Amino acid sequence: MAISKEDIKKVAGLAKLELTDIEIEKYQQQLGKILEYIDVLQEADVSDLEILGLGDESVNQTRIDQAISWSQDEVDIALNQVIDKEGPQVKVNRVL
Image (cartoon, rainbow, N blue to C red):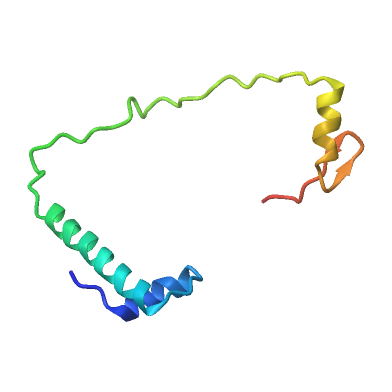
C-alpha cells in the first residue's frame, strides 16, 4: 500500500512536526514498507491458531495496598518540590 506525501504531511501536522522535503520522502518510503508488510501479515491464515490470553481473566489481579512510612526529612524534601500544598498535604486539582 502506497502512502502519499500529503498523508505524511497530514500526520506530521497532527503530531505538530515540521518536516523537510527530504524527511517527507524518507518517511513516505519507510511507512510505505511498513504498510506493505501489514498487507502481507493480513494474508496469513490464522484460522487454526488458538487465541492466547494473559491468564484467567475472570479473576481480578490486584496487589495489597501497603502504606510506607517516610522519615520527616523525606517528607520535607517531597513537600519542597510541590507547587501547591496545604500544611503537610499536597493540593491537587479535582479529577472527575
